[in-house]
Image (cartoon, rainbow, N blue to C red; front, side, top):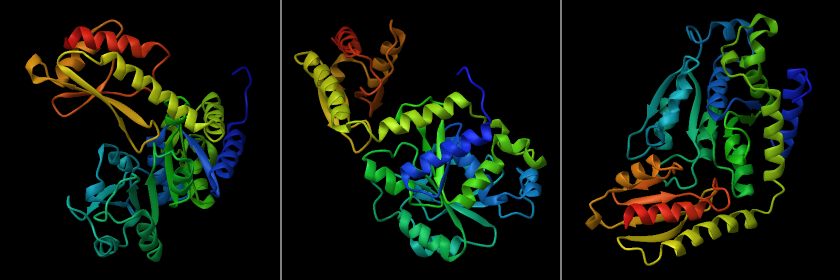
Length: 332
């Protein structure tokens, strides 16, 4: 924090470190996963051409469409439009076929966006098949794998699975406003050209100036990644399970509620579900509101109308006891 650096060199060296770690040609630290997606879109449309970079978000004369399977639509897909692209859906809510995806590619297609999740069924064209189809038509694939970081082999497969793959570094323990994109060197170089230092370099005036990262954030991403790939994840997940099991035990015997620990195929491992008896006259949203309005505030989530859910990977030691006490006060 007390030293100044040449940002281009820090981004290059940190990118080399990340690329070596995840097994790709290149990588680039960004201002979060969404910034990685926006810059990746700009890179696929404008490349490293200074005139095209200066033109964005006006895509006149550029390939300005990003394809996405309708069943993969999600809240963050709007980010693909930030650099001026049009998002074009393929298939319907029941799914998409490889033939439909291929038929949707046209001379204006800049890339295909793919939302990486561990549990897509056969109604969604796989990432591997999407990449094969795209490359046959000289089209790139941008994958959003923001939180798909565990198991490590799974994360590495994701990182190596598309032309550009976007991650949110906050899930690894880095600051919330950090992320990174990895992939082919040509495209990652184009991401950098569209990024915040590209605003001053070569007269590009890049739209990515709005996605500035700090030297502190870049170093934090490196530290978080280094720790993520060297820590004992069995102990990490066991610690989460122990906190949730302790909460479950603390809630046993409580009237009007049943609790259970539910395993997930996600990096946080498991979640506590607390089902509220309708006889209380309270819904899950009612309980969430009371938790939020108390002191200290407790932020939780819900499934359906009657179940409140809690994650433990963000809790400090002892905070699980506060949650149990408050739940007992609210529900009983």
